Length: 361
Image (cartoon, rainbow, N blue to C red; front, side, top):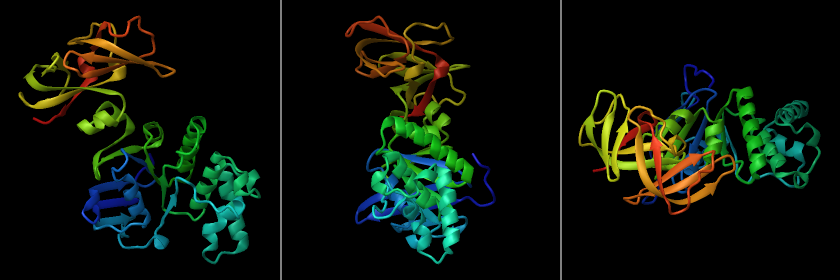
C-alpha cells in the first residue's frame, strides 16, 4: 500500500442515498488513502454499484458528504469530478479506432494534437496496446477491449479510478491475467482504484483493503488477510471464504481458551478477549483448518458428522458433512479421503484455528 499523505484521496461521511422509500446506501463512512486499491463487494442489491455511481457523480447523495482530497464534491456533477469510471460493458465507440477511443476524453477540451498523440501513445504503452492503435474496436478481443476502456479512463489523469466489475465479461484464464495487469498499472501510477466486484478472488488478490456491504451498509473494512482470518460479523463470516459457523453460548472462560456450548457439543476457542459467560456467539472455523484426523494440539475439537457429498475443485476437495443438529460442515482437503457418502465421519480443528463473533440471543 502506498503511504498516505496529509489528506486521503477519498472520504465518505455518513453518506446515504434513498430512492423514494428505499435506502440503497445507508450511513456509509469510508476513507481511502493516497494510492490505495480498495475493493467493494457484496451480494446483488447490497448498494455497492449505487455507491460507485455516487463517487462518479452519476447519483447525488441524499445526505452526508463526499470529499476528494479534502474538497467537498457532494454536489459536483459528473463532468467536473476528478474521477473516471470504467464500465462493466466497456462503453467503447465502435466507429473509432483504438487511438480515437483512448483520446476521446482529451478531445472534449482544447488540447494540442501533438500532446494528445503523445499521451495516447504513452497510455497505450502502459496497457500493452502499442501495436493496436489503428485497429477498430470490432477487431479486438475481450481483454483488448478492457485495456482500451482502462486507457481511455486513465489518459485524462483522474485522481481516482472507479471500476464497475470490469473483468466480469472475460473468461477465467484472461480474468486472472488482467488482475495482475490492473494491479501492476495501479502501482505504477500510484493512483487510487475503487473496484466493485461480486468476485471474492478478484477482490482478495488485488486490493489493499476490502469493503463488504450488505443492505446498504458496510459490514467490515479490512485487509484481505484479516477479513479472511477474522470476520467481524455473521454476514461476513458466511459471505467470505468457506467458513463453518457453530452457534452456541459462552459456558466458561479458562486461562488460555473459552469453552462454548453448541447444539452438537462443547467447542474450545483460543481467544485473548472472550465475551462474558452466557453471551450468544458463533464459533467460526475455516474449511481448510478442519482435518480428518486428530493433530494432537491442545484443546483440539472433534465434531462427529455424516458425509453428505464431495465437490472436486481442482487443487482440493470440499467435503460436505451434516452434524447431528443439522449444521453443515465444510472440510477442505488436498487429499481424497477414503469415506463413503452417508457414512459417519469425524472432523477436527485446533482451538487456535477458531474465532468468535457475537450472535443474537
